[in-house]
Length: 270
Image 1 (spheres, rainbow, N blue to C red):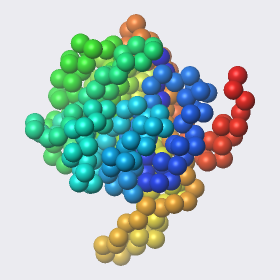
Image 2 (cartoon, rainbow, N blue to C red):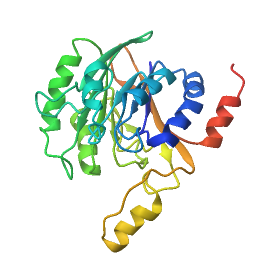
Image 3 (tube, rainbow, N blue to C red):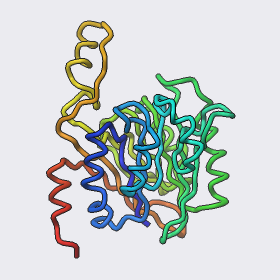
């Protein structure tokens, strides 16, 4: 089984490069399931029903999120209507939505779990204990289990990989928007990467127009952030899983410019 996970989709540039490239990526890598983090898909902040449904139409089958999931008020209603839009499972009991879902693919069933870190983030329930509860529930439905750990600190994300080694197929980090160079298989057979990276405007400061973000660093004064528009890139990973064991056999990072995406789309189908 091959799973494609697309890193944080940021604004219209991120959605557009997904529109142009996803079908070709699925064909080229023989993907069985597409997952994407969408918490920045609506203008860089949050998700709307219209955008979520457009991403589903493009082939994104499961949508994960993080700390920006509630930035658009309509997400409170949409997340209850769309079971494949996840929010971190370690939000308190009673929060709208769910932190896990299971999807049936031609290659087998897959459980997707979304949790969020606490270092430099909101003080949610302990993700290291909550994720174990989610895994126990997931095992009743699927062997292949994919975890999106939305967190700020590199150490916390790496720790989650070791915490779950041998228990899940993959632990991928999101939120910091810069793809890391540490994709690997841990000794127990779990694929991990500290951060998948951002799918959106690369000519920016993690998706934001450079002028406003730079001004805040230089002057310390507040400034209005706007999503950048230039040089879109698509960052993702392809995880290959053994359906019989639920463990990973490979993880391959992808870093594609618009030119790369267009070249892939122009290739003849074999």
